[in-house]
Image (cartoon, rainbow, N blue to C red; front, side, top):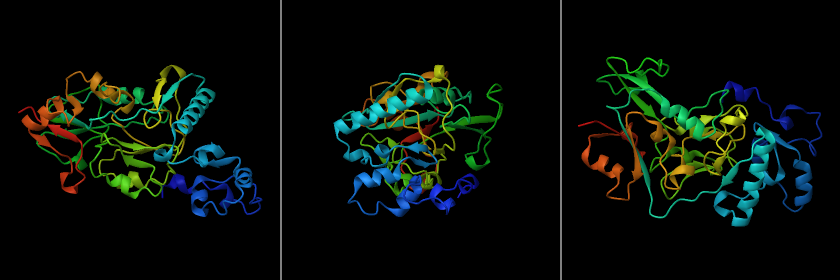
Length: 323
């Protein structure tokens, strides 16, 4: 357990003098204790209000929300309206939050030309802007590694190089983000099924279901998941108002975040934000089920490298070389 987690005490567990029938209940304690008797839902709602944990105040509606796969269209409409109202309350901006579904006949994959990437990190900041990532503390989904030429040992790479002084002689650059694996180990360890692989291959997180246990973060071999210890800090002018439920909506405090291949964009026929800003054309994205797609051309014609291939996760993120 992280030291910061250890310092955060559940209000029920930390004060023996609190009346247990009306005390705020943390989400972790809620899952630990179970629902108990379901006979008196009204009494249950009163006992759990106001709910509080790492995420701050949680409404009863949020706590008893169905799993994503069981939500009706009508239920989702209510949830989206609730999220929009919450964002307006917190950030003083009107946003549109949709439940963007996968397109039929699509299965996405990404490839990156290591020979072209110059390590400028424009992809990192475009990703932050598109996905409404917290600016303080700054959360980044893409980690760009500075590597010695001739080496593929990512454990000895440099994470904190100066992006104003690139490319450096004798170095190459290797961006790493969520690999959206065919066999993702992160989804297998989630105790509440808050993360899963969608039909289009995108691995998603339901932020309303995530309990912040961070098992998925530990299971990911690509360091692709981020835990937000505090409420995201965003200036009004920095907020991308076009959001999606499983994608770039502003996340609550105390949940796991990650790259979603910019599903708010890609599920509507656009490219990921990181690809759009790349000055060298290093990035290739597309539908691997389309034999004429650019991603299939790369996989068919280029020398492809799979990071940590020996783990058997079968990533949908590939690295390739010019020849």
